Image (cartoon, rainbow, N blue to C red):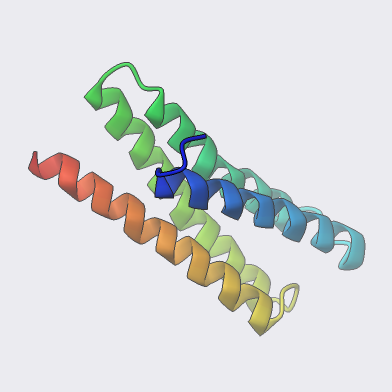
Length: 117
């Protein structure tokens, strides 16, 4: 992994956090449905970033980046839902929401730059 690709680094670190939250929800809260949704979209952000980096063209790169942005939006939704249904504490959810919002801003900024070039 490149040391200077911030979105790649942050999305991977976020995926690790999501896996740990999934494990916590399954083991301690006995929640298996909403947590699976969170696991899928939360880890998909970084997976699509990786695919974008390996894209065959600029168009392919942008398409994968767009999918990553959509997955981050979905992740934001599931975190809020888990918080509002008392599966995640305020503290847990705010930390995750801060991280996913940061990813949304970074990905959105890259998309804007690509659209303008």
